[in-house]
Image 1 (cartoon, rainbow, N blue to C red):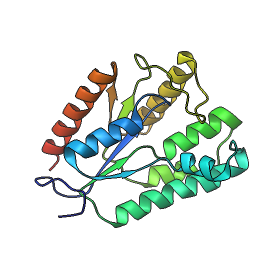
Image 2 (cartoon, rainbow, N blue to C red; image 1 turned 90 degrees about the vertical axis):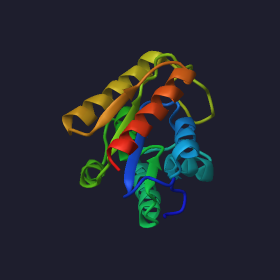
Image 3 (cartoon, rainbow, N blue to C red; image 1 turned 90 degrees about the horizontal axis):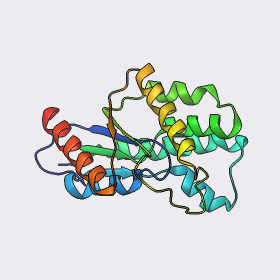
Image 4 (cartoon, one colour; image 1 turned 60 degrees about the vertical axis):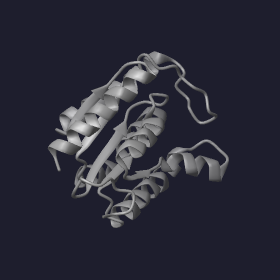
Length: 187
């Protein structure tokens, strides 16, 4: 059995948490791991900002995307039965477009070239924005627009996804039920 895997689940399954900031991606990733095992890949841009001690600029986008890919590839190489991505290139791509009005084309190409089994798309409604020194969309309308951009992209590219809504408690319950059902139906 792969390290970090829960008994009874077979084959590598890749789960992505996606959506706007302050919607619970990192928290839910740890909740999923606690319940089902697996390996979490964090959000590289947070590491990048912490290391650089500055805001990002458009010239940073390729490095951030390559860092995210490197972390994902390193985790995939360990062949965990469940790989939990706190984010992936979709967020890098949409943030680049949101903040700078453009995104290097290769990022979407790389995103489409990879296989992801299930995306949990987190809705920002019913969750407060939490300032952490890196977040920049305090208005719910901004986060809803980002959520809609995620949803539109996932639908356009026929990516399997489930919408997760509700307050923190409902969000946690719905997430764990969805993941449990998905794991049991695809084992």
